Image 1 (cartoon, helix red, strand yellow):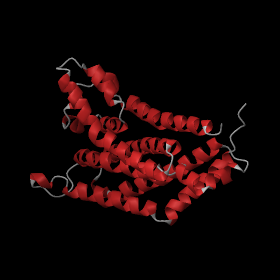
Image 2: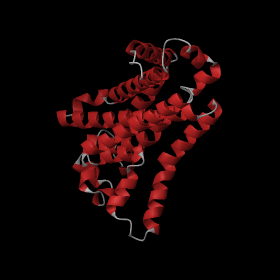
Image 3: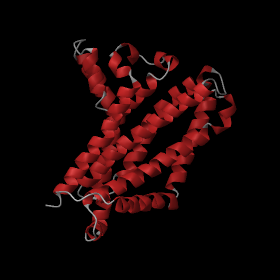
Length: 278
């Protein structure tokens, strides 16, 4: 019978992880990157059409979605790839396990601390990025932008779960970093190319339901869809709106799928870490 979780132990580890990221200015650096990109895109996102200045929150979000799809997964994967394997290489994992603490509490504490750092950086960055434009935003604009930031956090947490799983499975930090970068290339760059190739090779036999189901296998695509169907103007800017089943255009369903991407890799990581005990 598994012993009850000691939440104090989890909080101590999570607080240490968050303090480390604040002390080495990781949170500040990432927040600054997000803020600069958000402000630049809000002002110059329409420069290709010969316009400069804030146009609308829909156009800003549509431009930010493309950027965030590349940036947030990379930051999340780099953040978590050495969470466990790094402790194992330094010998500190065995030291922690010699104390009255379980592997699950260590893993959960690590994840919560890293998630808090990533969430703080995202909120601070994207919040500060549009602060100069606050006077131009309506209440509906603010709600729409908050939904975008929330979906970006969910995607970051999903890739952080994947990264922690890599850290548990990897034999050393070098291999963990290589796998993390490889997964970024796969999910962000290669997956959609393979999906489009499958659609072409099927010669139209891949129906919309199957196509949509395959998209759910990539948290970056789930993030895109969450923001694609957040407003009529953003939906019209993408071509996939006509091939998605209605049930997969519901933001609540898409958010639930993203939560699955957060929970399932973490549970697999916990199972693998528990197996290493034997």
